[in-house]
Length: 125
Image 1 (tube, rainbow, N blue to C red):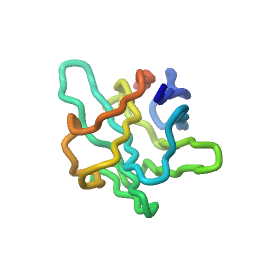
Image 2 (cartoon, rainbow, N blue to C red; image 1 turned 180 degrees about the vertical axis):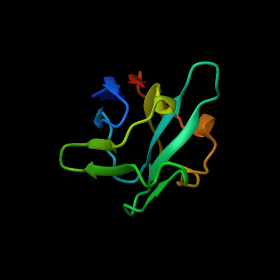
Image 3 (cartoon, one colour; image 1 turned 90 degrees about the vertical axis):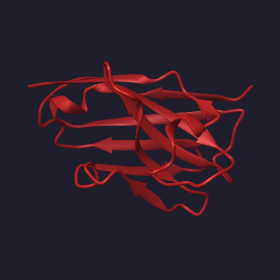
């Protein structure tokens, strides 16, 4: 059974940092586009970052100076390091994957076929 499980969310004050993890079971990162997305209350789900099968990472323009993405293929785990967090970063953060299609941060969020359950990040001012 394919499963993506996110962890690492929580509540933090503005300016703080969090590292989210996404661990896959029954699934391998190899040959798949992996991505982080987020959804704030009342807003559409949006792309945060994508990492393609060659390890190329793209991040949303507004986030690339604060967020970084990495993965550990041996652990089948994807990471999202978030620094200098702002209240507007408050959202449910999701990990997603798909074996087809373009793999960059401009990809349509709904096009991913496999999703985790999400982890909540709350940033207070």
